[in-house]
Each structure stands twice: as C-alpha cells, then as structure tokens.
Image 1 (cartoon, helix red, strand yellow):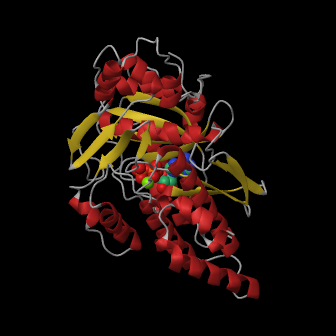
Image 2 (image 1 turned 30 degrees about the vertical axis):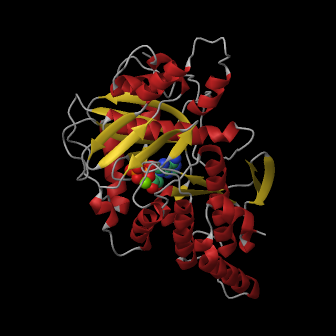
Length: 413
Ligand SMILES: Nc1ncnc2c1ncn2[C@@H]1O[C@H](COP(=O)(O)OP(=O)(O)O)[C@@H](O)[C@H]1O
Ligand SMILES: [Mg+2]
C-alpha cells in the first residue's frame, strides 16, 4: 500500500461533505421516502456514554450513503471516513523522508502533534490520537472510535467552510487528510517527543508503552502557526490583539450562521496565530462578503473535542452534563467559562446557545489584555486602543452570539 503523505489523495476539505447537497438531489420520484429518512436518521445517531460524556453523532454524506444498507460498527465508520479498508502501519502512512522531518510542536490530553513537510512541500501538522486501547493515556481513558468520529466529522465540516458561498471562512484549520494506523509508536516520533520534553517540558506520558496492536487516528491538518498561549511577548502590539479578536469573532459568526456552531472549549491553546503578508482577511456572512485588516496575522481555530453543530436538524454534540471534573477547575478564568456555559444552557448540551461563543470571546479578550507586546502601550494611539479593548471586554457579555458581537460591537465599527 502506498504511503499517505506520498499519496495524491483528495484532500478532505475538497470533498463534498454537506448533507444538504445530498438531500437536494432527491426528487419526489426518488425512492427516498420519509420513512427511510427516519430510519437513516436513527442509524446516524450514535449515543455513547463514557466518563459521563455522551457523544451524539451523525455521519457525513459519504458515510450515510454507505451506511444505509447496514448498521455498521463505529470502527467501520472511521475506516470509511479514512477511505481505508483496515488499519495501515505507521510506515505506510508516513514516508521515511516525512518521518525524519517530524518535530513535536504541541500536545493536549488526547493528542500529540508533530509538524512535518508533505510531498507537496507544505508544512503540515499531524495530530496523533490513540484510540480504543485499554491503557490510560495522560491519566485518561483512550477515546473510542465513536468519540473520534465526533472530532473527524466536525473537523471536516469546519474545514470545508473554506470553499462555501453563503457562509465562508478560512478561520478554521484546514484538514488535508486522515488515516487510521496500528502499531507501536515509531522511534523517530519518540525522539521528537524527547526533544520537545527537554526544550519545553511535557505534561504527557512518554508514548513508548503502546503495543503492536494499538490503534491511532492521524489527522493531517494545515500548519496553523503557534498557539496564543505561546505568543506572549511575540505579538507586535494591541493592534494585532484587536485583529485576532475580530478574526475569531468573524470565524465563529460564520459557523454560527452555517452550522449553529458552538466551540465550547476555545481556550488560548486552541487559537493558532501565524504571520501573513496578506493585508486583509475576507469572509462571507449570509451571502455578503466582508474584508477585515489582518494587521499581519492570520488566526486559525482548532480542537473540536467539546464542539456542537447541526446539519439539517441533526445535532453533533458532546454531553458533558455529568463530567464533574470539568466544572470544578479553579485558578484561571478558563475554568469559570465551563461553569458559565452550564449556567447559560441549564446543563443541556444538545441545545444551541451561541452565547457560549461570547463567553469564550470574553475569556480571550481577558488573555489578550493581559499579554506582553513588543511595542509598549504608552503611545496615545495604543492607550486609546487599550481603552476600546477594555470597553469591549466590559460590554461583551451582553451579546447573544458571536454574530451579534461582530455586527454590533463598537470595537469593530
Ligand atoms: N494545525 C496545527 N498547527 C500548529 N499547531 C497545532 C496544530 N494543531 C495542534 N497544534 C498544537 O498542538 C496542541 C494540541 O493540539 P489540540 O488539537 O488542541 O489537541 P487536544 O485535543 O489534545 O487539546 C495545540 O495547542 C497547538 O499548540
Ligand atoms: Mg487543545
């Protein structure tokens, strides 16, 4: 089997993944009756209970069509999403040249993230997530295939907002490809892991204990730059902070309009920033194109573990109502946000309540106001900017949604 990074695969973001376009093709003479639609809907909803989190899923167009005849397992659905018949080996997935270039760039509880260069000479980020194994990783149970489907589906939907017409944004990280592999952790990745640990210190377990039967999902994302948590002292001024807030607001607003999207975990490790030579960023909101000043930065939102969205009335969400630990955190405004979200939706996580996006914007504004910048805030212009960002922070919680913020906040007009 040929290697994935070497393979000229159709990038996931190029695929037609939208359920509405599937339905548009059905005419009254089509054999697709209401009854069949209900059956399909029933087959599409997966209810998993694990660690108190219930993941409610539906599958994308490709999978729905294939799923219709058989009630297939979560594992098979993941293979379908990966366009594989069964697992690959690491070697089949990552060519020796790409493997040599792997450098660990980040980590979360569930994923180790490495940068490398793909065959098209693009820098990409590989997020490697252990799946289905019995051993705990970083103190947590491994994700199941069902839970991993949640991340796959949302990553594909948001990535594909990049080439839509009515609601379009480049603010969600592009998903190029995804694969399912089996095997122990490759030596080169362990060396890259050690290097990161030496230089920056890792909070994760060294991933050397996985046996040959261990399964992993590898998501190949576009490289999004550095996360905001690691940008203190690196942004030039508050003008860039404002540009970041505007881009995040616009990106969330587009996804609210397109997919009734709530991110629900938009802490500063999940906001990526890279420099850009483009003077402006454009987005389309409800059919109208808008252009905003980039101030030299491009923002990408990542990590949809807790996110919620809807396609044609089918909801993809993660029920965190019984996840006590998540609501007990102290010591950072981030942990208050989980409690504030719960207050806003009465602990009902299937419902759409876009105020949760506003809560995360409030948190991000707080972080950006507290960050260090290369140029001081002493000039009259910077002091004025600081005042307007502070006013924004004070008025923000009165907005209903990111769309409301984008359209009515004085900071952006
Ligand atoms: N596409 C990307 N480009 C650059 N860095 C990334 C990318 N994706 C993830 N990272 C880095 O890896 C870290 C962990 O990734 P994330 O998707 O948030 O994993 P988790 O779900 O485990 O939190 C991020 O905080 C970021 O530093
Ligand atoms: Mg994360």
